[in-house]
Length: 302
Ligand code: ADP
Ligand code: FRU
Image (cartoon, rainbow, N blue to C red):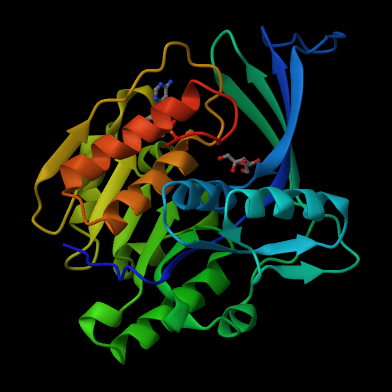
């Protein structure tokens, strides 16, 4: 079982952006004029969302990513601080716009439709990563994007780990979600691999169980594979090769599934930091993610 060191931080490296949610009670018909129930501006981005969840669940947490100087960045960074996330290492770029997403939340179905603008903001580089003091972290979670640079960062953490005792090593997790970013480097390197349904299906796996079994054969020895599958819950397989499944936790009403997967990943990391058995870890992930689906945003998930 993984034994993360208690006195260090969890670092989440990946996207942060401004999410503008328009909440509607039915999906609009194209080329019609509609009114919304409410609009919400909040921080978004897979890693930023996961970091906010990990922090809320009691771990010291830091976020690492890029933003463009300006009001959007101020807003999302303030929100991250409110969640208790350390954002001191965020790399700021002048002369760009921060990424943002326009999102339609349909409350009658709970679906979220995302239109994302990356605004050509430069992504994290290995040279940004080298500025971090890895002694501060017990766990680094990478989002599977910008993989040329992220692969080098993962290798740098592995290099760091080689010169440390077992208990001082940094645990590495990676999220394989969008196949277009080719996050395959994670398969042979990370300790915990998060496989999203989208990625699993891209690789021909029809179920979460098939995905964890299939990827478990390919990950490095001792690694854990975790795969979330929407309202069907999630599956996992740890170093012992035993398959686990947890049903989804259904809230009274599903109102907002935006970031359900990010919340699930954050909850899994927090539960693994407490060294819970994998079955409990999985149940906890589904419980926190299910609770999130029953509300807007990411507050009050504990
Ligand atoms: P993503 O947001 O990346 O598409 P998923 O849809 O796979 O992620 O959801 C991640 C987790 O969130 C699931 O394993 C499940 O526990 C929970 N979840 C997602 N959708 C629902 C839902 N409709 N009802 C209850 N739980 C859900
Ligand atoms: C949810 C999310 C949003 C963001 C989008 C980027 O998983 O991280 O917060 O706008 O995905 O793809």
